[in-house]
Length: 297
Image (cartoon, rainbow, N blue to C red; front, side):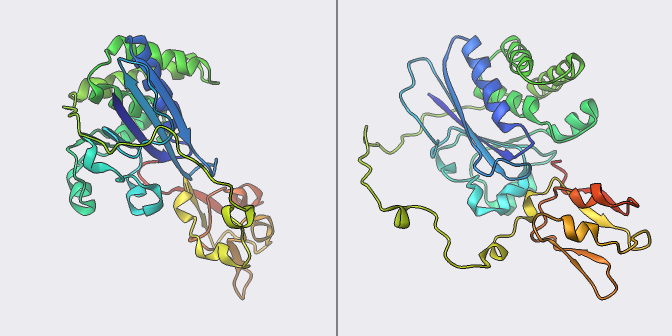
């Protein structure tokens, strides 16, 4: 069995990428399974998806803690321990990085598996005009590294999965072009059969009182401790020369990430601003512009 784990942010399309990979493997004659985990369910939040490919029925379920292949759409997630990008990397035969040059990331984060890379963001921006819809390119990288999926299987899977989405025929064609260019640029990985720890067939889950077992919050003010600035697709930038100090952005900010200085000029708390850009939409003089947050977007 080949176990693949995708990591990205809401809006990158890693859930769709896992579906494309699963469909392509199914069309190639394999048993497949794919499932996402995206608790926050909003743009910019960390998203993980899992795919399994096997010649025999798949009886495993749930998260993949010991992957054969790790696929990373946004390298900024390597800075977030909660994202768990490198968890289980000792069993992985390869890791795919959405980057032009993997060497700096490998050195900085002590990445153990052999790294393969392609700048999917740049290719997506070139063909689609926006860099965030990475599903076709990321799925293609996984398909090629698995070594068991043909170009024809991949193209058919991209077309099938995008047929379920509100995507124009022209955009589907461009996504196919992205997928095929990534597929052609990479070489299959050598996936080794690394022994994995045995697990029980069935785990007993005892009853736990909800007060103990649930995420109950008793103390006020703890939201300040959770910096959500990494969720942003883009950041609001305020032009003080255009701003009329009307205060609408301060009033409308849903996360309380906007304050006013002594002159009434709004100030953005970038540690907690999630990049919803409501402030920009309500600004009557267009004094708040959008600035892309990272290269991955």
